[in-house]
Amino acid sequence: MGVIGSVADQADVDRVVAAAGERVDVLANVAGIMDGFLPVAELDDATWERVVGVNLTGPMRLIRAVIPRMLEAGGGSIVNVSSLAGLRGSASGSAYATSKPGLIGLTRSTAVFYGPSGVRCNVVCPGAVMTNIEATPRSEFAMSVIGKHLAVIPPPATAEQLAAAICWLASDDSLNVNGAVLSSDGGWSAA
Image (cartoon, rainbow, N blue to C red; front, side):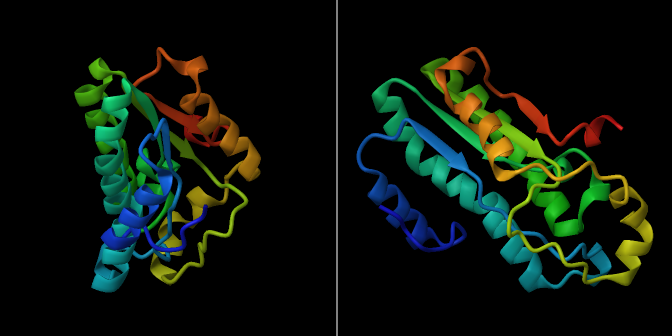
């Protein structure tokens, strides 16, 4: 059963969790939005709140909601999708570049607190992926500064390629993996 809503809205998060039922074995936080590559001096409050709400607050709320169910079931797997921007500031604007490292921190904290009870939490950091995420630049200044970094992006991954990494982290094949940050960016972060 699908639920249409925003992970930034607590009422929608509650509806998602209710639709999942009593037992939750896997949570994949894959919702994300960009910020128009806005540097902090050009960043408006609405963009900041929307981006941080979807990219960081929403996953926190979903994790917070499913942890009790996973603990009761004896374990579970949480996979968050951050970004290459979680590892380097040259891949996005200020709001996005704040939210994605925050998601890595949330992942590691969750792994430390709940790993001993059987709940694993890991994060995937993709580079460019062929999705419908809007990445239209809204700042000429930003593009003059970070454009050279964006010019060397490897070919975008397919959604299926990214899903394979997410599914592996969610599966029992990765039972010994907890708190990991997995780059899935075609080698962009290694350059």
